[in-house]
Amino acid sequence: MAPKRAGIIVAIVTALTAALGSAQAAPQRIIIVRHGEKQAPLTLCSIGKERARALAAQYLSPTSDMSLLKDVKPAAILAITLHTLETARPVAAAWDMAIATNSLMLMPIRNTPYFNGLINVQNRKVVRDLMENPRWHGQTVVMVWEHFHIASEALEKEFAGQKVTLRQLLNLDKVKGVPGGVPKTWPNDNYNFFWILDYDSVNATIPAKFTVIRQFFAPPFANLPSNDWGAPEVLPAGTGCT
Picture 1 (spheres, helix red, strand yellow):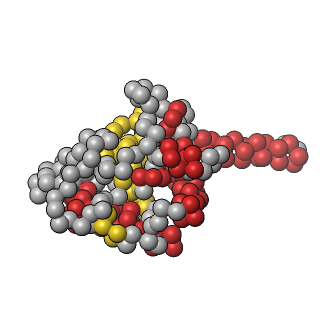
Picture 2 (cartoon, rainbow, N blue to C red):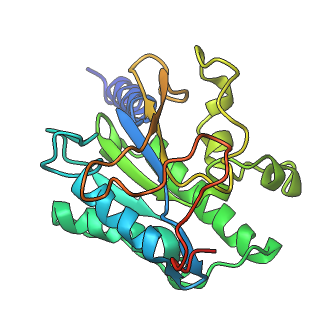
Picture 3 (cartoon, rainbow, N blue to C red):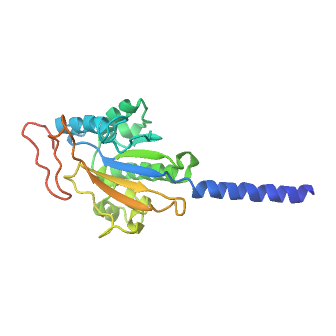
């Protein structure tokens, strides 16, 4: 075979391999959960800390029959801010896994355009890696996230012309078979839901399935609030939650 022709064939095979890898880079499943209830910019309140322990012991446990991860070790447990990191740590410890951190995750969260802009950049970076890096293909990834950057119509309007929420970045508005569509906003009072995204090998840019799971914990965590979607959360006195 002539060297020139061989070189062309190698280039074509390389290009096809790269394209295939990109097309198949989506995880098999992404589990999204909001951080626990908070007390201040630096810490969760007592209910939030209990919710973090409950997640590690039940819904995101390596051993519980209630676990969404039963028989499936997550490829990563991701966080994006200080509150999400505090919530994710008990889960990571239960799996004996580490959470990759950066300076943004160690800063007290502030609802300002500047700080939201920093989270926007990180949100885009994380999603780009999840959807383009072949290391995640066929894997399950847990995202413990900030609700404003999961879904927020207000944030999307504030940063019009940019993709800033997971709802935008993961094309959740294009998911089929969801009555009323994927919510445009994650309500402020809801800490008790999971959004689960399942992907197939046909279209890796849009989830093939979107599932909502409400948290109902078993003892000893059965006292944790589980309000309806969009309804106020009723908290016991003295929890320090804001």
